[in-house]
Length: 278
Image 1 (cartoon, rainbow, N blue to C red):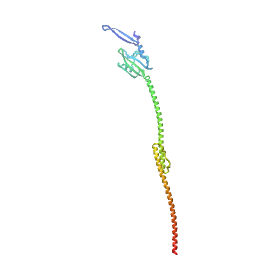
Image 2: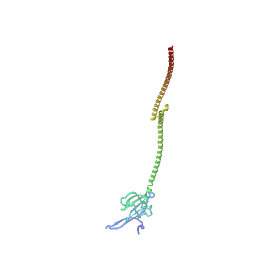
Image 3: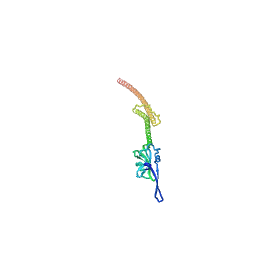
C-alpha cells in the first residue's frame, strides 16, 4: 500500500551500510506537508491576491508544487505540475534571485519575487507574487493625489496669474494716464500758441516731482516769458499808436497853418497888384 494512501508526500531517506559496504537497510522519514503549508499559507501583509509557495522538480524532471496554493486554483496543491516563465527562471540556476513583473498562469499581471533554495541537496524555489494592481494601489492613489494636487496648483496658479495680469494692466493704464495727460495738456497749449489764439495766462500742473513735473515747470517759465514779451509789445504798440495819433494831429495842424499861410499869401499878392495899378 502506498504511503499516505497515494497522496503526495515528502520523504528523507538515508541508507545504512554494513561492514562490507553493502546496504543493510534504508531509514526513511516521511515529512508532513501540513506544517509547510501552514507556513507558506500565511498571508500577513500579502493583501487579497498575494501568496507564497514552494516548487521543485519531480523524479521525471517536471516542476511541481511542494506546498499548496489553494488561494489561486483548487488544483494548485502539492504534486501538481506547473510551469510559468518566472518559475522556470527561479529554477534555472542554483543562485537564482530576483523580482520582476510577469503574466501568471491565470493571465494576470503580477509582481513576482523568487529565490532558489536547496533542500537535502535538491533544487527548490520559493515564489511570492501579488497582482500589480493591488501592489501598486497605494502608488496609484499617491499618483492620483499628486495629479489632483498638481491640477489644483495649476488652477490656483492660473487664478493668481489672472489677478496679477489684471493688476499689471490696471497699473499700466494708470501710469499711461498719468504720463499721457500732462503731455497732452502741453501739446494742446503749444498748439493754441502756434495758432495764435493761446491763453498765455494758463499754466501746466508742475506739482509732480518727476521728469514731467520738471518739464511742466520750465514750459510754464517759457510761457510766462512769452507772455511778458507779448505784454511789452502790446505796451509799445500803444505808445507808438499814441505817438502816431499826436503826429497825425500835428500834421493836421500844420496843414491848417499851411492853408492859412496860403490864404495870407494870396491876400498879400492881391494887395501888391492893386498898388502897382495905382
